[in-house]
Image (tube, rainbow, N blue to C red; front, side, top):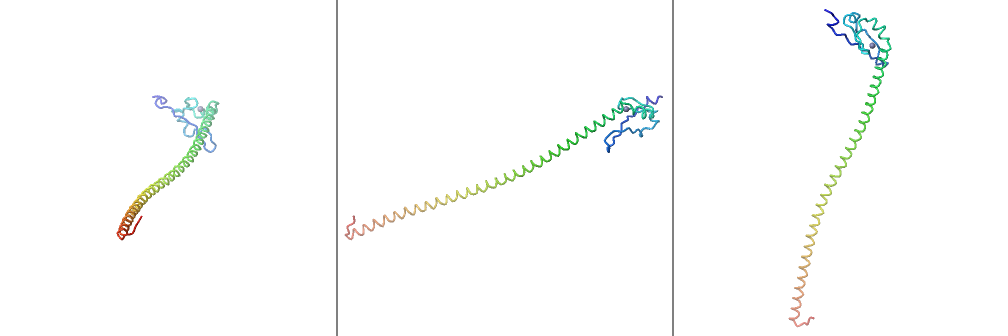
Length: 172
Ligand SMILES: [Zn+2]
């Protein structure tokens, strides 16, 4: 049975070196016999290689492969740049969110203050209304007293007049 038909070739991928931000070829994961018996596919041209030596010393030095490494590096730089931009955006949004939260807290406090002022105001209105009622009562009492006094004075006057008249005094 043909081994190349029995097993699909393995995918090769360059290694990312974080410290100098580039992609390098590292074929140490694939032995010469893996190349020979299974084959290794390079993503730059999708071709299968069966000779480790040829792969490292010929293919990995080809312009197509080197361009591929450069494009990976540029792509990762773009991804890195985008991620830094996103991080900054998130930072800005967090600051904005913090500010609007503070504003919400401040406004809530203001609303609370206004509410308690309104409550106080209502309380004062009730107090004023009951004071006015009390004042009306006093006024009515006073008016009644005035009326009674006037009536009493009238009676006294009439009574005094009749007494004086009965004693013969002439009163105009
Ligand atoms: Zn390649």
